[in-house]
Length: 155
Image 1 (cartoon, rainbow, N blue to C red):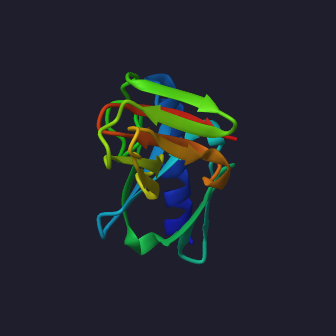
Image 2 (tube, one colour):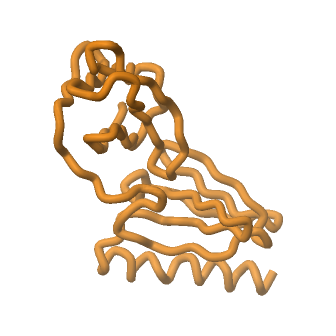
């Protein structure tokens, strides 16, 4: 019981620090090397019940044994997402993101903010690739091609 109270206090204290430092993400690092990222804008709710850490936000739910958690940090940038660069020929039409001017067969990939690959497609003979937003999960999505990286909020 005493350990749970200490863990709860330690989880609340950094929140005031993260707001002052401009942090936008909570990143949970597991002992097996995996990372799970929550946007603070999604208002993650943290609880510790029965030896498990549970985080529920507007866009995702996460549960892990406290023993498997290596650490957690508050960060300004999501883990697994590099620098976001806006360039190239990209437009949105009829619920699809359309990449143009690509090399035939080059890949366009969609990732969730925690770095999970959720969709991949190849550029057609005209150098265009299409990502249908209606089939992607809701939340922050990173779209990457060999020429362009963009971040969108899929609602």
